[in-house]
Image (cartoon, rainbow, N blue to C red; front, top):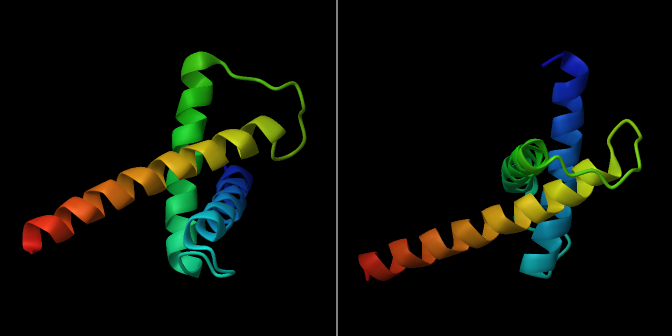
Length: 95
């Protein structure tokens, strides 16, 4: 993976993490800059894996493709949902 791809992943991760953070948290900052980036990059990675396995292509290509953005958003939603379930179970076990 080259530097351009890594920068694209970070931008895509931050964008998807921010959008999903706003959706789930109902506030402008979402989960916070660092957590948005971490969750977004994890979601973008999950989206990339899904794209590779199922060869998903929406037919629109730019530097960061529309397909990558949609899959990153969907992947980030999945990552956030898993994170919330795990966090809820940890809190329940601690109580």
